[in-house]
Length: 591
Image (cartoon, rainbow, N blue to C red; front, side, top):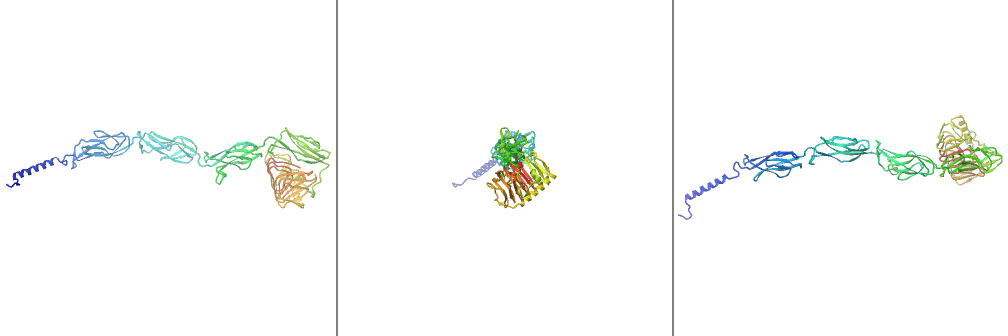
């Protein structure tokens, strides 16, 4: 036998053994029917509320999809809750989607399910923002954060309402502030069932619509201080905060940045003088409020007796007037005023101040005395042998001579003390206003025959003065000059700043003609015996006597005459066509 030859019987046995081995191997393959190849977990995906339980099941299948009975091991792979050995899953307290978290496994084979945990019932509501401050009519969007007992935010939409006023709210939480400013605690309410959340609202004024200054009016003594306050409000009357810019518009004093007003030295009524603006310098578009201030005079400090000096013919009479003033020169009352003659020259009515000259001519220095308490004033009287001759050119005032004021359209006096120691008439106008508080110590005629006759005589005098030829041409300002008797003419206006002196004997006549206007900021002084009754200021238009002017003579104006404040006029204010207006504290006494 060949050494490599194998007997046939042996070869057959070897083949049979190989077949048997392969057969045995096939009986133990995992792909054999009945061996689990996959696991399916149901339900998948699933949604559970916090704390609730769900039974999961696992189904095994072989490679051919046939169901294979299994007893899986359950576990949780990605959170979301816990699971028992029988597949009962209990959701945790954290909401969210937990992908493939429930696991059922048999050996290395497993199946998975995704779980979404949602919040439980509403347990709390937080309303934001809180608190909120809104201007009237403004809006605010509120948001409600709804949470369950575990603090998870829910998507539940709340019901919105307003519980304590302050405005209205719509279904989406948009709040509109009402018109009334105030504090409204816990008024905005968001509710889900019986669970509620709230927010507080404070409503303030909206757009500034008005400014009010208080006190108004205010009464302040000269030199004293008064605190003013400015309050801004919207159209609903709610207070709107702003920083006022203070100023004084019509005199009376000064004011600082804090609204403290200090009264000046001039008494009077200063209408709407204190101003509070919403912008610096009250720029365009600024809003403002105003207050009126009445500055009152101080106590009596001095008494002036007018006219001074006075020239009276022997046996003639002269009405004297006493003007009391405080330390600042404001006219004040003179209670208990008593008249007397202390250096001869005549006699005087102790109550009225009417002086009657004696028979002996001469100069009686400081003889007429007016006393009030511890204060007194005096005037000098020059007694002449007889009345002075009439003015040259036949000038006479006729029926106008009894008048301290004669106007064509109207007469007015702003405030007391204002004293006219003569007649007051107007024609053809009829308006005489301000008396009281101002005082007329003479007759009062408005639009009647008495006034008409006076106006006719005034016209005659006006035309006579106009026709008088000029003797000397003067400059526009007479302040600081001394004039001798005569007729003086200006090319246009006449002004007096300071003092103009008119010097001459008692019979001297002065005519000063201003074709345009007469404007004063000073005084007239009579010297050498010259008398105010022989002085004529002829004005082709209007005359203005400035504050504090001490004036003498007859003003004969074509249009109007204005005495501003605290003017003393020994003479007459006679206006043909226009008005005669007095400010505060002016006094007119016939010369």
